[in-house]
Length: 106
Image 1 (tube, rainbow, N blue to C red):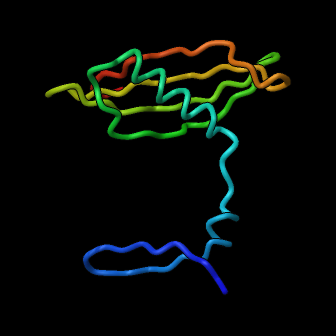
Image 2 (cartoon, rainbow, N blue to C red; image 1 turned 180 degrees about the vertical axis):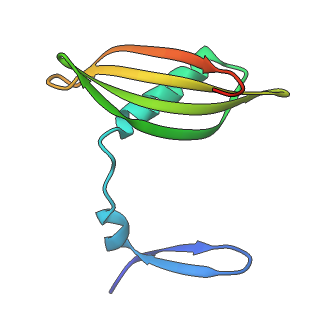
């Protein structure tokens, strides 16, 4: 007997086997993306995160930097924020988080 996840909309119904869903890999940066989103929401409490992009990773001396771009909406204002999450890969411990607001054209 196979179990699956049923996805339904008004026009289609699709079935995805649980084995396929379980086999999809969680990206290595998932933990840090959740942290980046959470800390951005703390820094900008009245804004909603409307889009998210993992830009990539960089290795530095004793650290890895996961880079993200988040798009926020605060009332009528929309803006981007670059979030760099720096951590020690040997210990998986956070070193720091840096934020940089993006303005039109950046």
